[in-house]
Image 1: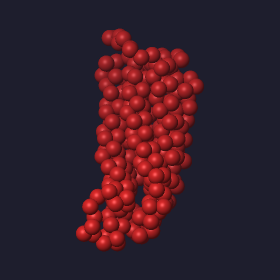
Image 2: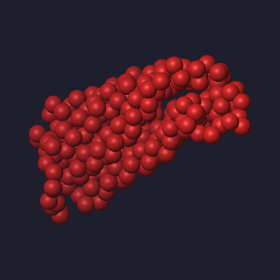
Image 3: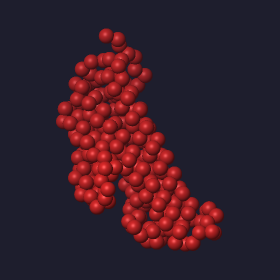
Image 4: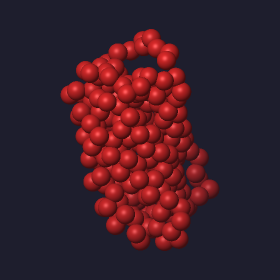
Length: 242
């Protein structure tokens, strides 16, 4: 069986991946209240007014989402390096799925920049009424929210890959692999519900309440374990190139 030479130790890869998850959490805590939580569903005037009152904090929130995306790229690399001794092919595919999700996420984040420009009057909107501008602001925020929600389905597939690799590893506890797979079902199920249910908004609070705890528990437990013990044993079940 072919042996590989690693340029990054499993311990360093675990620290990079685990650290990125917690930096990401801090960035989400910064970004969420200064962007999506400013939205009043179905009320463009209140939403635009909230953005104007938020001022620079809305820009801070946008920056928070970009930090999340940078962390996604770093985490993709860290997880790939960490799980490469277990199964290089699956680890690489899992990393690319997360990078694809990150690309979608970054693309729809442009909608937040558009909302900021509309609110600040940076664009020539003289031909539009104030009400029309407010509607465009709300639409831009919905494009971001719905685009991100769609992308989270791919993030769920990424977590499924991580869960599979964790179950194949002799170092990662089995319960962590199970939690990651449960979290993957939560993310992907939420996205499928968004696509399939004609009145998703009515069920969204209930769906998110059901999946939030398993999602957070799976990711954060794995991140904490990686920082604490990840890569110290480095004994995969099998080392394969694909």
